[in-house]
Image 1 (cartoon, helix red, strand yellow):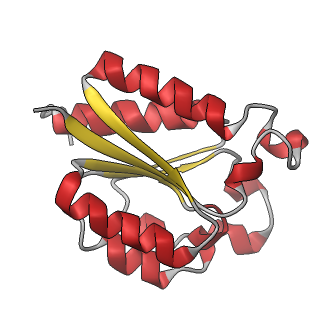
Image 2 (cartoon, rainbow, N blue to C red; image 1 turned 180 degrees about the vertical axis):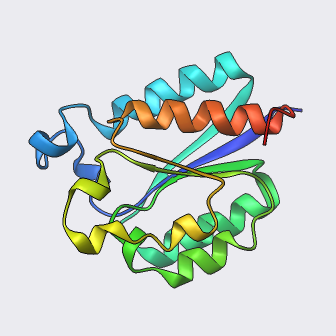
Length: 149
């Protein structure tokens, strides 16, 4: 049975490639999804790639992943710095969780330096552009196959 990795994206990531390209680049979220789907096939995992501008929807997808997913790669975007609710949902998930940020949040405004999600994440990738998604997916697949913790 193929394991499913949920790739969850928070607010404004639907505008990737159009919004602040000097920070986030020109790659679209559809491009990231295509890359992750191809990589998932290579790694032997199915991908459920989702984006919402609504905190509750992301929480519902984490709950869905509890039943149907083996791992989560999450770019919570602005919810990183504000959402105890997403943290609480992630704390109910038993599989590996990797937090991804396209930009290096530590080189940006000071309010972006704190992440609630990091309190649950098994790893954090920041500042690697959209390549961070592939790195996160590789790490989750490695953990699912019994790789190093």
